Length: 342
Image (cartoon, rainbow, N blue to C red):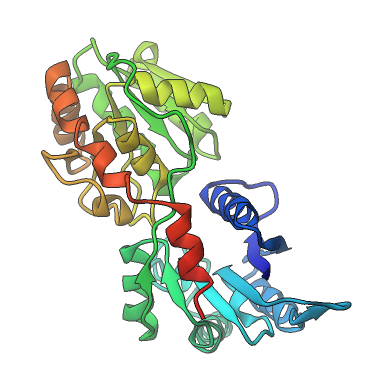
């Protein structure tokens, strides 16, 4: 089968979506399909750029290239589903959330003026028509599917991405909490740093990742006088992040209403408990309080208390021991079979 994976790329930014598309591409090829990726850049500042990108996708007729028929396209993010094709599968990473659950917050570019409202309405319309024309329809988590149903009245089924890294296991439970994420406000790494004055000095915080908030977070650690126990590693190699997972005591991952969260499933596969928040979305589809991790509010005292409970290595091992079973059924066979069903 000839398959095209449709993806939108924010220039100069790479994250979980790119990992997912790369993994899906490889999985399809391993199963004998001819596959390639079609990607267009997307920008939302000003918001009208979203409509320009949608038009670019709509003008693409991907049913045939030269003499080669494209049997199926797989849509992933806004507005790839605007494309012209008769066989469109949906594996929804997320919609343009600024038009939905983030609307009215500082994280949304849409404003109350008439032009901005009209652009937002067009974005919602593009989703309704484009996603509605996809079959089958899946989302990368129950949380993503719930948003689609809540805001657009369209149903989809959860189809979880497999764990991207191989070689995850519990080598040790060294006394450090690991954070692996992009450093921006949505990931809420700041909360972990603010808790550190109340955390037993035996525990350190290791932060792997980079992003626009890094400088401010480093200044915060210095101001709180915990810089000697908070390490900013920046972008690290796959080998180094694998080692960090395998040796840590636990993983902190508490973003705002996360779509899925690779850090969660990677931590659990390495038999490490995850400290997360009650509003962290897809993370909670894998983390159960006192079973595979700790669900804590993010005020400094509560989060410090959660971290301090992990001073006990035996307790961390007990919570982590249930993790691998939670991720064992996540396979590319299931993903490929589901996305290519007629």
